[in-house]
Each structure stands twice: as C-alpha cells, then as structure tokens.
Image 1 (cartoon, helix red, strand yellow):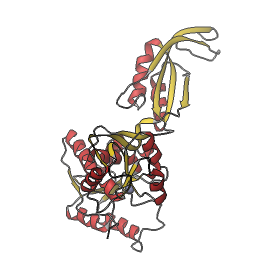
Image 2 (image 1 turned 30 degrees about the vertical axis):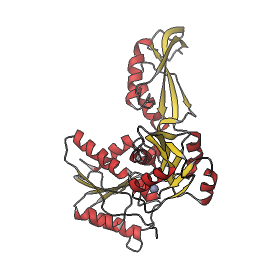
Image 3 (image 1 turned 90 degrees about the vertical axis):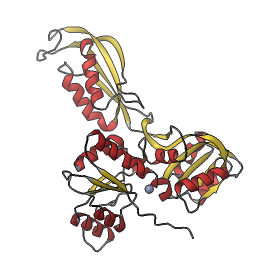
Image 4 (image 1 turned 120 degrees about the vertical axis):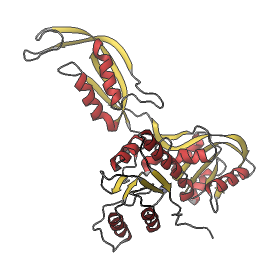
Length: 368
Ligand SMILES: [Zn+2]
C-alpha cells in the first residue's frame, strides 16, 4: 500500500473539507509514493513517538493533532517543530494527521468516546452546517437514469445511510434554438416541447464541480439547464459531538466512576448532583464546551467533554450534569478506531499492514 492509498482511505472516512477552516490536516511530511507496511498511531507527535516509530521500522505515523499549524519560516533544529520535521525526513518516516475532520466523522473521535462509555448507536449532536447544496437538472426522460447515476457516482444523493437519493418530477421543457444551434431534439429556429424529468439531488459543496462535470458529460443537450442552490440544512453525514443512550440508567456518581475507569482519567471535574440519574449521554472528545447548549437541547442527562472553563460549569449548573474528563483522555479512545480502519482497508486489499497504537502517553497534563 502506498501513502496516497492511506490518504484516500481517510478522505473517504473523514474528508478534508469537513475540517475547521484554520486547521491543517492531511499529509504533514512525506512522499505520497512511499510504500507503507507499518504504521504507528498516536494522538500527538512527540520525540518519544518518533523514536518508537523508528524502533518498529514504521514508514508512517498517523496522529490526531497536526504537527504543523502554520507554515514554518525555516526547517532547522533550532525549534522543536523544525527538529521533528528534520528527524522525520532523516528517518524516512511520513506523518499524516486527521484532526477536526476526524472529530466531524461518523466513527471518529466523539463516536469512539460515546461507544467507549457504552452508548449504542451514537448520532451526531450537531450536524455540520453550510456544507450542502442541491442540484436540479432538467433531462429528457430516457436520459434521466444515466444522468442521475453519473451524479451519484461523484458524491451526489447521499443522505445518512442512504445513497443514490433523488427526487424526480416529469414536465415539459421548451426551447427555441437560434440559427446557430444544433439541438439534440427538434430543429433550430422553432419552438420545441420535450418531455423532461427534473432530477434533484443533494450534493456536498466540496463535490459541486465534480458532480456538475459528470452530469454534463452524460447529458445529451448542447446547453444543459440546471439549478444549483446552497442549503441551510445540517449535514446528516458529518457533525460535532455525539449523543445516545446507555443500556442501564445509573446515578451521576456511578457514571463518574465509569468515565474515570474507562478513560483512565487521573481525576474528573464535574457539576451536577451525585444522586441524579443519567441514561441519555452527550459527548464531545476534546474541547467541546461550545456544544453545551446542543447537549441540553438534545435532552441529554450528562455531557462529557474537556477543557471546560469555570463559566461553562456555571452555565450547566442545574440544567445538565457536566463532566470534564480531560482533553487527552476523551480523545485517546479514537486511536483503536483509526487502527481498526487502517487494518480493514489493508484486509480488503489483501495487503499486509501492521498498525500499532503508541505505548507512549503523550498527555502533557498531570494531576497532583
Ligand atoms: Zn484535541
């Protein structure tokens, strides 16, 4: 398997366009044609992780947090980031990061956290907004199928677990071609009436140009009539946080114990009454304070996240139990999901790939 195959695997799972606009996800260091047989997965890039990767002869490190946020002005050993880039290049180890795009993916950070805490079938707490468009194209009846298929092949018509979703309505299209026109149906310089189908499909905004190009390539008309409009709907396929129910209702006290044990947290911060019961659980791995109101709106009994400030706890008080379980602790649970995804891709291609989760704790925070 080559590095670009790994990139494609992540692009299908956690596409780059779903990342926060100021994030820097994807290939950080490396050659795309590099053959990959061993991968080390970690939350952060540290010198210890690099040593571990070198010791196991890994060609690739996959991290959640990117090493490079802003373009460095030089790559030298005079700063920690430059030194790391140099070491990666010297040891011929590539680095790939999936950060906020992995937060927004189904089966990503928050889903992994919810599942670790016993939530069966989590759903997104807040779908991503301003990511969808709709395309409506007018096609002669006998070409509707092939046009819809070309659009679907390029990413149109996906709604949650459903693919090839379209709406079709029949009508009459009219046109009057100029003397220079060469109409597929009818003659120039006269009003033609043709039975057409209006095919509508939803499309991620990032796929608009690919879908329009594919649609035009199979559409029989010289001039294709289509409408493109931006949707305000949330995107059911990508979102932030996760919510769902646990099998057994329990008190906040026992749930705190479960969180602490499951996430190997040294300590937890929380607000809420210990005897209150919880069954509906909202989570957001990493810094998820801004989803507090969404968790309350989703009627969750408890919200588990990290990096919560004093005023965040204050605004939760009396409305929802809120647990800060630590940034590292709430995100580390995604590492097995990353490893599993990579292994299954290799398996489906009948290729050998060793994927190891780091033995290092890269958490810079300790409790005393
Ligand atoms: Zn993080």
